Image (cartoon, rainbow, N blue to C red; front, side, top):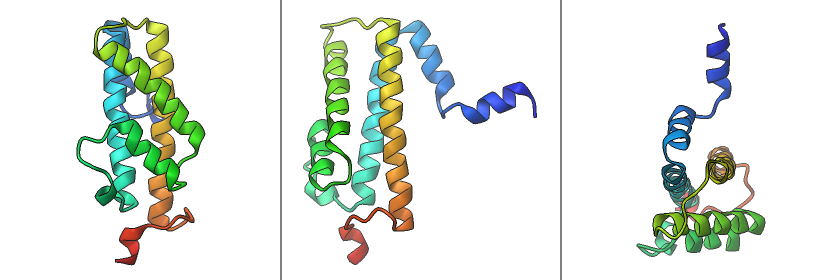
Length: 138
């Protein structure tokens, strides 16, 4: 296996896109990371059968609070998401222009949260989370 193949196996999906965004526009990297986080949270909500409890247009942070309330994710993760949300909103509304360093930290934090959410989905699929999924009892 070549060095490039080994690196590509170790790199998270979308790393090339993130790297390009970080280089050209740290703000775009932050906004893109937020959309990926939104997708991952939506996937968890669906997998755990909570979509009926999430109002349309409910903020990601409010949705994440529901996951904390249901003990699906820890409160410490919600605090990290709140920090991500604050910077995302500042960037999205033109109140802040992110530095490359801020964007790298943001992307890394968002990726970590997304990876945890994806692992929760995998565990739920295997029936190992210990939480109650209303959709399984239907």
